[in-house]
Amino acid sequence: MAAPSLPFTIADEGHRLRQLTRLLFAVVWVVPSALAATQLVLVGDASGTHYGLGTALVWQGSAWMLWGVWSQLILTLVDRVKLDSARALPWLAVHVGSTVVVCTVNVLAIAWLDHVFGAVGQVTSFAFAVRVVLVNHLDIQVVLYWAVLGAAYMVEFVRRYRERDRAATALEQKLARTQLEALRMQLNPHFLFNALNSVAELMEMDVQEAQRTLTRVADLLRLSLRSAAQSLIPVWQEIELVELYLQIARVRYGAGLDADITVDPSVVDLMVPSFLLQPLVENALKHGLAPGYRDQTIEVRLTRNGRSLEIVVEDNGKGLDGLLTTSGRFLAAVPSVDGLGIGLTNTRSRLTMLYGDRYAFRMSNLPTGGCRVEIRLPIDDR
Image (cartoon, rainbow, N blue to C red; front, side):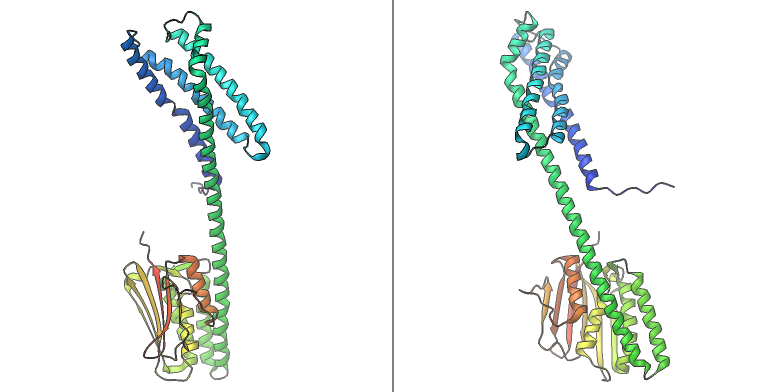
């Protein structure tokens, strides 16, 4: 049985970027090597001195590929010698000393290559080759050192920025998950206490019905615990929970309560926040309807509208007493859920954390009486 793969961490990404940087700085010198070799062949032919391509590649490639080695040294110094205001002088001393060493070795190496391959027609000795290289190449070697150093620090700063950005993102996600869990844990006992209060009231009137209702409460709690570790659950599972809740509610509201749930078959497997519908139904019962009255209705509809899941909960009760609330894409200037209780306040907070401003939430009174709650959630088919 294969061992489980470990998660890819921020440190892993930083290590991988370092490895990629070292590889890039080692092989990038192939480009100037090829250009210098080609130039030597062409210039040599024009001046009457012919150099084979192989000879030119070995000659110029050796000179330029030395920087593949020096680049690794510079990258190591960037890792070990930190650049900050408190260490500016030691940092400068290290790189000035390193510049002297690198440029000295490079001048000697290039002079030896020129002496061996005869790039300078008047080369009569190695000492003469050194003097020619000092005049023609020393400044370029110094510039190359500090250019590589600057490029290395640029990559290092990008790496640090990405690490900090990913760390901040991971912290925000962890905080959001913690807040969502706290909200969900707040909602579960709130709902359970309401259900148990209904059972307690029923115990005084019909013990057998109270027992059956308590069984439904247990089933409802079992469904809630089944999704305890999930912020999102399928629509069909959320509908199961709402149907059980309405069965319990009918005990208190009597035969005069008519509930109709309509679900588009194309949305039954879409993921929605757990305990999304129950607070909406509870709000309709608590603020719009009243026990003992006839011809009271609650309609729950879930349909697909383009790239959105549209959820509507309507009742024919007394409405919102003039309180209108919008948030999400129906954004009000100052979205407010004051006076709407734990359930709806909790619902809007969770939607905001899960979807940002990509969701829509609207509560309004119907012209014919009653309240309409509409929620639209983005559908991701990927």
